[in-house]
Length: 419
Ligand code: NIG
Ligand code: FE
Image (tube, rainbow, N blue to C red; front, top):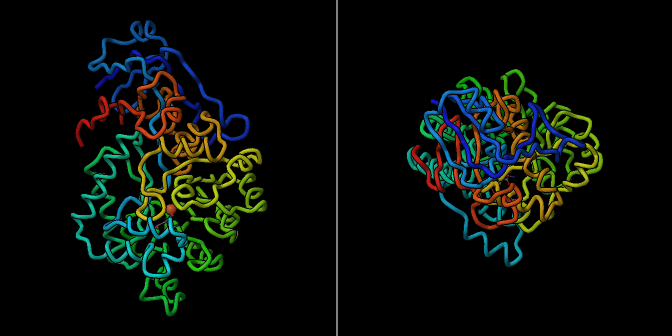
């Protein structure tokens, strides 16, 4: 199948097959009126319309960008998209001044979603996940890292990861499953959290690895959840399982999770609202990517990660939604870009790179995804607006008009074509 995208006012993309940082971070290639030709799943031509016509036969399908701007589809490298129930009742409690952790300790928070997720059938969970994936896609995201972590027992963690596998078979969005069984200490282990750490290390992680249900592992390294030593123990086997590492690090307290992620050569250290100067220095020296989640700061009304300082120090930075029912219930990367620019001080160009090429690098896929270049996968989003600035300028609404995934039009005029 060949597809030609023409009629764009502009194409804007980062360039390369690895993380952009330093002076390269905000450097986009901007091609006025470029056309893009896709063959099968890949991009085979980007450039001048007349040259395309000379080089190739007429395409089987044409997508008219109608004066819009073409960008790489978003990669969302940190989400918790499988859950049952909802926690909207926590919203007013937080507005009235209760903190996220206070709510968690009084029966709300992660454990509330754990109860609902344990009780939910496979079909209910799959249904909810597919609905969320539709929303991701409609907002221009075609690749999503997906964590378990609302089971906190073997059966439900497996159920969640099997839901992710089933969603992958049923939906065009690509999923990268991460085992986050170490998301919290479940209520039945509160009297002795070390017993839960032992269960994770001895039974749950090995058994999920044997089933081949995850490609990475994550731990919520946080005061009152898993401390640095417990996290170190939880990550120690990851390599032997062939798992890459993501880490919820320095989110609510400066525990030093960033330095630990660097020590383990993690793909990413995520959240980082409380990253220390030492953490920034360690990250800047490493290949580990700092995944920033400004939606969580916005939604919890807490501090934002020091994005500008990290970028100036030479850290590689990506952006993600953290989509989850408690601290960031959104699938919208354009919203995240608006927050990253207006609240964290990234430029639009940096934010776009952080949400595409660097986000692809944060899940180990920068050689295939995250930019519009010949040989890369044809995952693209087309804005209604004429330039990439409309991504954040036209805030609070969905700026995405069409989405192409692996060379197929999957969203047309804002409407999902089919699953
Ligand atoms: O990334 N930090 C821990 N986990 C999630 C929140 C999960 C929840 O509240 O349900 C997060 O913010
Ligand atoms: Fe998270």
